[in-house]
Length: 278
Image 1 (cartoon, helix red, strand yellow):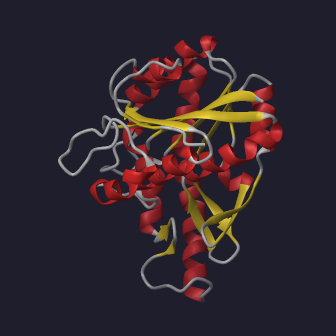
Image 2 (cartoon, rainbow, N blue to C red; image 1 turned 180 degrees about the vertical axis):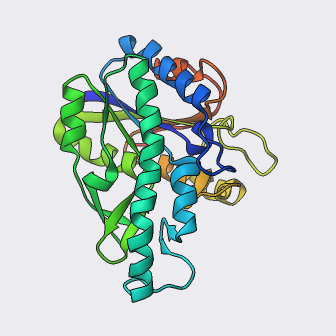
């Protein structure tokens, strides 16, 4: 098994989530340069995912396409629901791809061998859960010393017509399926705007185990801005699930210059650790 690291750049980090279609180009460029700085010293592979921020989330919210189906009382499979999906799914796909293009441009400007893999073309869902996912393109890209890059996207859903597949869900799916292709996910890095996970008093929790995860969920909550997939609570749940698969997660502040580069080479940089338990 060859080791691989998963990295997610949160949508609130690379966009202004309170302003539709507003990227943070300086932040995107800096994070790309930090990956490039760490790239030569990485052992194994790296898969990069990013959120859709004020691009995909705002578009999905406008059409009521949520992580768990349609909002606004339109039944799944109804003529109203299907009509909304027919209008909304292509729009959400386009908006998510627009932000992805900006991220890819920054990675290539940093001279990284970035290779784009869109979930809308690689996955299908059932009741907003992954039904099938094409892992081999990721594995082949890793074997070719490329940097696979993916993101939160809209996907076709067997029951609901379409649903939103979060970056967390995509990366968690890869942690489960990449070992079948010779790649073992050892750790995951989750970057947002906060110094890890805060408790009810706003203090960073330095280490989270499954035993305290339930108590933290109420304190963490969802996102303060438009987010159709669950915000930090969803990230915590994903990290705890990965811990059960033997994957250590670190959740930290991507607004601090140099943090990503240091985290990639294994340095301790504050934030919250969710240790592996298997």
